[in-house]
Amino acid sequence: MAIVDNGIYVSGVRTDTPHTLDETFRLMHDRDGMGWIGLYRPSETEVRQVAAEFGLHELAVEDALTGHQRSKLERYGDTLFVVLRPARYLDATEEVEFGELHVFVGPNFVVTIRHAETPSLSRVRGRMERDPELLARGPEAVLYAILDELVDEYSPVLAGLDNDIDEIEAQLFLEEADVTQRIYELSREVIDFQRATRPLQPMLEALLRGSAKYAVDLELQRYLRDVLDHILAVAERVGSFRSALDNALTVEATIVARRQNEEMRRMTEESMRQGEEVKKISSWAAIFFAPTIVAGIYGMNFHDMPELGWGFGYPMAIGLMVGGAAVLYVVFKKRGWL
Image 1 (cartoon, helix red, strand yellow):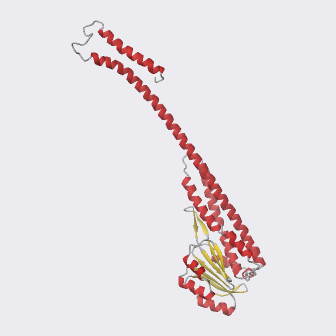
Image 2 (cartoon, one colour; image 1 turned 30 degrees about the vertical axis):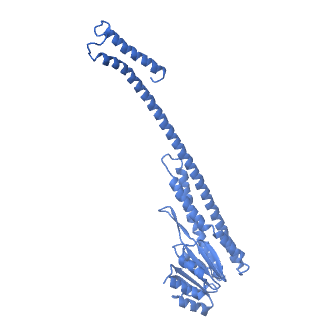
């Protein structure tokens, strides 16, 4: 069986702990008390058995069986169907893990269908059983306690995300750090967390608006307002996280662009320096090439070449080589190549 805990409560005090659903249904009628059934990943048969006993709406039952629902609150006659998205922060992977919790709240029963490890409903049940006065206020009091526990368990998630953002901001100006991917991944975590928590505000506001119509206890209304205040604080912090990450991404893009500009400038300067070196090498090559031409011509040793028998032929060749080199040196020097 998927029953995690199961209790019958009369005037806020636990009177029975049935071991089967059939026994639960029988004792609820015999004791005229409230049944609180906690299921963990139940089978379709078990869910439909509960649905048939309490007259749960088929659409709500289908949602509970299908799972992967957004946070929402729906009313079917005198029964509330609530979908909650608990979350916990995983230090090892620096990620937020989301679960899913379905709660059916009727006139004399509460059925919880949990699809994740959180929130700890055993802690909620223990708290309520230690406070019979609060538990005696009925199924809506159990819903309040579940919502309160859910919001309390968001605190470690907020702390983990806050710490990650601080680390990113510290890494932004480190030369060797590239945090663009981490900013993007953390932004996705924050968006998913915001998607899970944002519907809680209108859900609680709807509960409070219907308090008079459905005769919700005045003290319980105060408790619900307290949870609403906490939800508003959570929403404000998550909003600040998104703003901080948007700013961090803008700063990171600016820093990356600046680094790229500096790299381009360095490469341009290096290219210009290499160009100057090429100019010098080319200039000296041209200077040495001029005497090589003269020497090559007069080194061919043809008998009919002019000036071969001339006494000033050798000095003239040397003069041509030196003069040509000198002229090229002066030209290149004026152009700044040397």
